[in-house]
Length: 373
Image 1 (cartoon, rainbow, N blue to C red):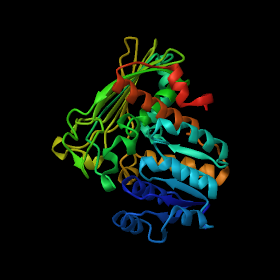
Image 2: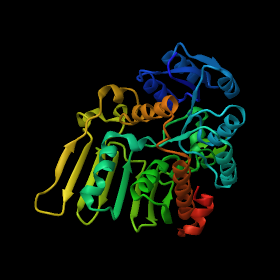
Image 3: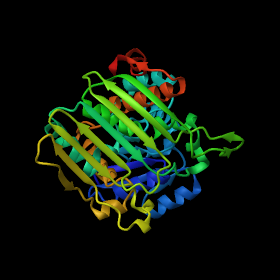
């Protein structure tokens, strides 16, 4: 048997991306899968024909061969499933973002933190996109110390999910949690400290207007601006637009300091690229020093095999490669409970700021993450 043996909880669109990337790892395999939707279950079985399909999370945990877990279920199920695992059989787990969806669940997280005896890795794969990873490595040297950080995402609307669960804030945590906790994680990682102030404006402007599901109107947002101030004085801004299909780059990240600027340009998933625009662009990193030398442009291509395995520029593969070392060698998670917790806390603060038209300060932020985790 291989050293890393996954039990999978949830095999919808993202779960199937995980399956394709796990298949590329030399010493990993999928042993058991729990997926209640018949169509998604059939698609998962086709990808991993040797995996055993089971009828519950409890059955996954009862499989002795399983030595690690992946949670890729709908957002609002993540915390409850972690609690069930903690009670039955704590194993190293890679849990998809977001870690939780409701600010009222903070007390449950405090209990989970005390009870869960195995490593928890929260899936923040944007860290592992090759152009973003390059920016993270070079940013301090290129800028001389980052003072301002901007992340812009211009993309297509939310995709359809099983049972339309992602059309409602009660299930997703809100757009600034569901879609943007990745970006708040990047902000906090780059800052190297915690936020002290969040200000936001957002809403539902173009997409989902008039969408009704079982008599209920969709309430997810499709655009926002968010400003986050950090303890060390770094200012960060997110610009989100989800009615910007056909943008040449889906993500544009720039970091600026007294020495210069570094930015990365990341195209979206290849399967959504408008073919009439010609070939999709190659990811780039651009370094612009504050001297007459001018900018330096570096192409950061992604392995075509990894592009074919998912929609996230190869990051899912690199994330699993590192998670496998947690399982097989006892390494510490690179993205732990604290990181996933803060990413959601910033997103919830941004949702609240935009909804109530006010600044969310340090006291309210700390209430979302008591004891600084």
